[in-house]
Image 1 (cartoon, rainbow, N blue to C red):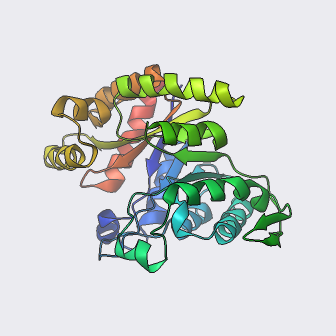
Image 2 (cartoon, rainbow, N blue to C red):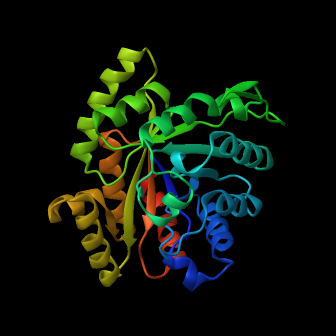
Length: 297
């Protein structure tokens, strides 16, 4: 059965829920049988509300026992590799090994936050350099970073590495070289199926196993029509998809209808579907996801 993940409230929804919102959402997600909870890395620095991902997942870890903790995905250029590894190592240790480390080039170069942390350079190079050393650092192995040999302790089993990337050749090759899992988003089933065919060719070229696929999709469940229209309008601009493609790339409607859409993603090759919730009542949306998982059994 395809697994379901859910994004935690880290943007405008957290203003409505308040400081306890992350803990409430994480507890509820675990209670309804969600496989993973994730934190998006959307620090922009222009006044847009966005909680920092590491602290968000540490909060979720403290109030749950079983759900996987997903970075979806950390922007590698904004964090020194050794510091990123130290934070993830600590979270992996304290959560009893529930972390899955999503890494990518990030999507906000030129924003105030990126400029402030000096992340305006070559994003692809920064991501590749981090991917090359992060497993060893987390495992506590002596690892050379910027000319210094670094050993972090306590070493822990390195978490699965998920690479966030679009279906470009550069992105898919980065996934093929480094990833245990691929994190695409905003794709229709047909687009996903075509991209996976190319990814399979690249993994065979590098002699690596095919990564699992954790597809990100925005969702508005139930009868929240205004929220659904707002979501579709936003995604049409961001992903440059037609109205028909938006319908295929998102999850909406009743739990039964949402399960049909998730099943279509699974048939196209997704092993997991991580839902970013855009409905007006965030916690009720998680409750509805519990009903979706019932339909998928």
